[in-house]
Length: 86
Image 1: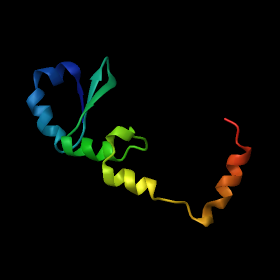
Image 2: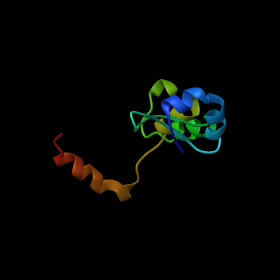
Image 3: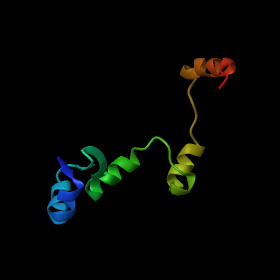
């Protein structure tokens, strides 16, 4: 669902309710500007991020990372890194 920022401002409650079902794209000058989504969807999106601050990780996650290892089936990745120059 797309809505102009003016329409959104005039009917905030309506679009808050709509965002519980699916994200609401709020446009500014006919271009997507912001997105309103449910807290539940936001939590799912944020948990799925590829990168997080270490400070945001819980103790169990930090321990799991610290105790993890890469199996020998991925040894070829070490060889790729030897020649990689960023």
